[in-house]
Length: 307
Picture 1 (cartoon, helix red, strand yellow):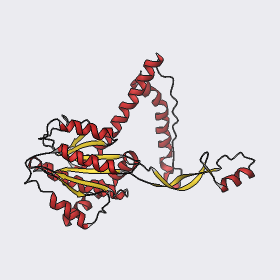
Picture 2 (cartoon, one colour):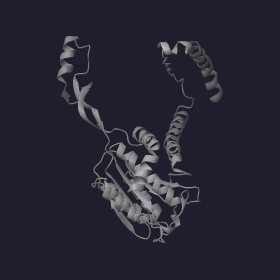
Picture 3 (cartoon, one colour):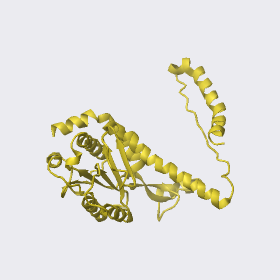
Picture 4 (spheres, one colour):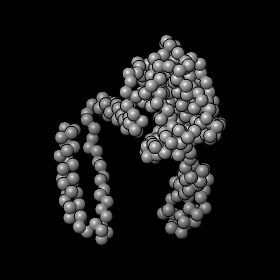
C-alpha cells in the first residue's frame, strides 16, 4: 500500500493531465441532476415564464430541462495480464499505469470500475459495486504476481469483462482496458470475444507500457504501446483524436462522392484575447505585431496545406 501511495505521489502531475483528457474526451458528463431554463422540454420553468411575459415573449426559454449538475455515468473494466511473459519491464510499466489510471478515474468520481486479473485462470479483483479503499489495494497487489501463470487466457478474461459490462445499467460509455503483451494461448477465440463485446457496445483498448516487443497489433483493432508511463497521455490522445480525424476524412469523402464536387467554403471565426492590464503595457506592441502576422499568414498557410 505504501508503494502504491508513493507512485500516486510520484505521478500526481500525470494523474491531473490524464483525468483532464479522460474527462473531456473519453468519459464526458452525460447525466445531469439540476434543472435550468431551456427552449424545449416537457415541463415549464416558472422564472422563465415570468421573464417571457415581462419581455412580451421575446425571451423564449420557458421550459425546464436537466442541464446542470453534470455527473459521469460510465462503466469501466480494467483487465490485467499477470502471466510469466509479462515479467520485467512490462509488469513494472503495467503496475505504474494502473496506479495512474485508477487515480485519474477516482479524480473524475468514477469509482464504479471493475478489475480482472488473468493468467492461466481468471480472477475478479474488484466489482463495479465495491468501493476503492485500502483493502482493495491490498487485494489487487496480492494478485499482481508474475511468476505463477504460464498461460495467457485473454479470451476468458475479456469474456468475463464483457459480461460484467453487459450487466451494468449505465447509458454512458462502456470501456475495457486490457494491459497485456498478448502472447496468447487461446487461439482464434479472442476474435470472437472481441466481436461479442463490440456487439454489446463495449469498446476495447489494448495497452502495453514497455519497450519490449509485444503482439498487440495482430489480434486487437485498437491498441497503444508506449515506452514509459509518462507517454501514456500523448499516446491516448493520439488514439482518440486519430480516430476522430479519420472519421472526419471519411465524412468528407462521402460528401465528395455523393455531390460530385468539392466541399463549399468553410467559415472559421478566430478570436484573439489580449490582456490589456498595466503589467502588459511593455508587451502590447509586440503582441499586436504577432497578431498581424497570424492574421495575414493564416490564409496563405491554409492555401499551402490544402491546395
